[in-house]
Length: 255
Image 1: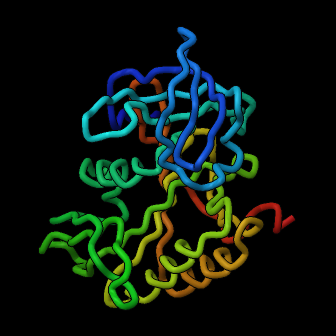
Image 2: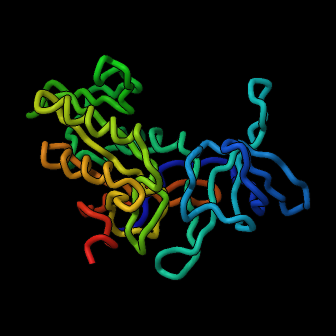
């Protein structure tokens, strides 16, 4: 299936990653020799995609309301099929990408016609969480249940398998439990946002967080839907690479 353009933006600025520190900061040397400090939205270990010296792409967006004018958007890695691959590392982007995909009908096959999309709606145990996306079907839909969607940015790989999480995530564990709780009165959906185009399938990161893997399988058994969605990252835009299948266990634990 050919990739479909999903989002366009002014060309990013390329450089070389020097170091990441204080979780939120990276120093990057641009092609002209200038060293800039950029914001890193991904506070996790970035397993498999953080390599000092690698090529990276930054967005330049100066504003009096921002401490830093630069944001780290993409990183170049050795892809699963032997060629280089650009990975989306800005964890604030997946929710926007999935909303665009839904609004443009790319997920009509699983969600049907949607009348309203809401973001960050309070839900969960004691109303202490916010759902990434809440879809309210059109009145003509054959299934009128609301659709609760949790989105997880996924950059770590095991061969050509996209893996989430890459570290222990108590927050992710809680989200799986809360998705189970909205069933069966509502639909509950986990969308791994596969932020690299070199992967063929998704699996839970059992080796990083075994409890998450167990909860992932419990959620599927309870009726939570898993819909991995893949995107390609380019200098001046992002493409839709389609839906991918999933495994219930990390491949290295199945051999």
